[in-house]
Image: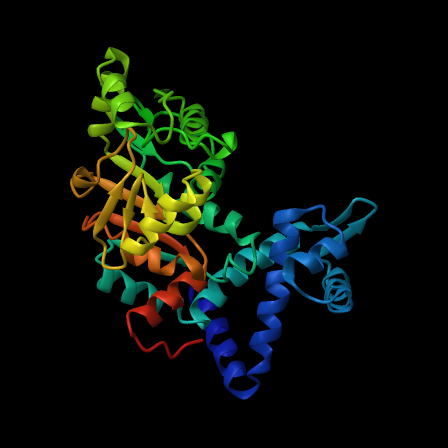
Length: 354
């Protein structure tokens, strides 16, 4: 931050002590403005539903933002003006500092051995539009660590998808190869690892390889596929990954998404499965309790990858984030406030700044 920004932050901190309700109003208007931006053009009713606010409240606040020149309203719905976008970018830094998120980043970094932790204000479990901001923040980090002669592996999932969608076109990178970190997830094509791999490769003007194999298969089928020359070549590339970008899932949600039978699901949950990442299921202490029969990144190799970026948001992902600790000192976590504060609670760390 600049010196002028520091002064403004100090003024806001003083106002927070004297008029504490000002921060609640500031954050509410910031959230409304940000949600309009990520969904524009959007109608009042849809906005009220997304934010779980009454339509009267939304109407009052939107009228205020419109009178301040931050929002435009037309027949298509509401959209944010250029000045409104500037306000969003400026307030983002202040709210981050005023909510004590820098301190929380450092605590989680130390306790879970991350190289860096980046927290976005808010909770995607209550504000789904926040996933776009988490993706944008993740993209801003990743675009600066892409270099020549890299093999980049990406998993599937909505969080990784948002990150890759927010990466701009990048030119001038040589000998970059993008590969899926595992087989496809089968049902939602847009968030499959193969789809995300192709999108990222296009943005980097890089080469890519795809894994046209089921997400889950029998041991016999897996052994047969592993002997295919083309598959062997892809596996070799995956094993030499320099940059891994992966999403973290809750075990119960991922088991349902992959169509695992109720019996199989219950067995894993009874074993203590709380998290999933690149085809491995973990208990709350980070022990691998199951690996799906698929092709991709091997957990035993993750600790040796040069750089890792994990992305996940929402209070409900906190336990999963803790459980999927990779023991890689070059690992970076992109998450949100909801997950971060719940991580502190689960680790029995006092969190004074709320």
